[in-house]
Image (cartoon, rainbow, N blue to C red; front, side):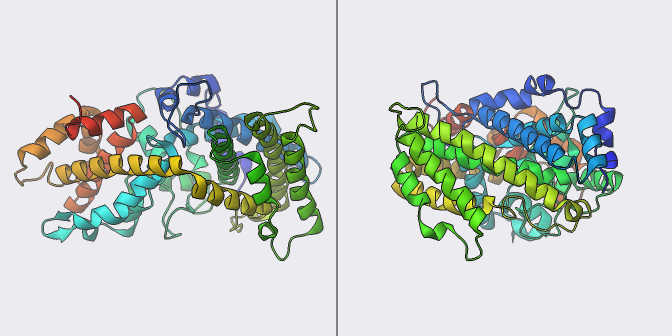
Length: 445
């Protein structure tokens, strides 16, 4: 793979890295009304998916710029080319759009979707056979292993009426989320588009190099955002976090001395910030965690960039099978962070209650709408309740279904009808999906 070919399309599109244009798009603006992890509160701190998009975008830019700097000596030609085309801006634009595809209630909503499809779809039949028996493995994976990035790609390709251009190459042609590594990292309904792009960029079914950067930024922003919110909402204290991070189980048997020192120094800095030694004054937990996270983000970005440069040849030849977080000193941070997440989950009654509420909303709506569309656009007669629910779905989703289902067999049409339901529900805001569930259940009018 060569950067000149991989970024050829981006360089030719004058508005491709126009962040202001992407920020003004409906796709991104709607994220202001969707929560990332915790439900919105009536205060200034509320973290929405919009905040997540911006953070991920800037972190991707930061990582790419560090890669350019670190490769300036060993990979001068590549570094000069990336600097010339403003690859940092392209990385920022790409991850900004990719990050805005989370459903209502963010990561909990994503979990709720996978959870229902893993069990609920088995109980629904089409022509006396389970719905899943009518689908191939890729179709099943689109639901059971629902990917918000893949669904964002579908949404922009099918519903984008503006001239917003989606960076095709940020999707890894093979997604880690998929149960079968041979299944491309896009929805089955867009497989023809992805195959065309893969041929055009000459990446076959290898990961696009930029996808490693975006995935790393996703992880860093996701986990640090969770920690910051958890401390702010008093689900855990900074002292408890420090104690968990100090555990010896955070280290691997082959942990190098320098690797250990890097992690240990970050924990020590956290303690110094939390106790007020760094700023020579008392500091509350929310301020302490924010200051520590700024430090940790910088350290992890540096490690990811160095890992990319170290594995450059394997990445560009498609032989690199790891990820930049696991294949760097970030792995120790990940292990420590995993333990903190477990601790927060154990202590958080609020998080459990929110999970239950969101899961109930998705369970009700997915079961109701999926059952309703099973015989939509078939010769079978539909009952009145199903017809009523079909009428609730906005016409733009039905229009896309009609356009994409032409000349398809009945199995693929069934898949596209269920995908239409997913398109509709995931495009709603937190408030809209909650009100929809309440109205359909008769709780409000």
